[in-house]
Image: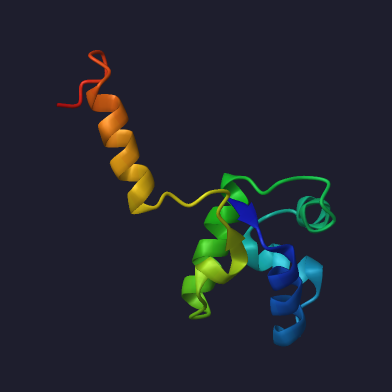
Length: 93
């Protein structure tokens, strides 16, 4: 999971919050959020937990503020099941 920094900055702007205010609402240090927004750091558990909580409080869609690295489609799941069935040590029968 990766933070959608553009959406985070837009949220702050739309709500009239400064970046330090957004950090406070997320429950993280301003300097940490600043580094995430500037691409110097990736978001960690505390940021994602704060973002999830904030989205619930503000009635926002959490999915608008994150990017998933890869999506697992049903085709991938079926492929993994077939592949693992041929592997005797996989535990899948």
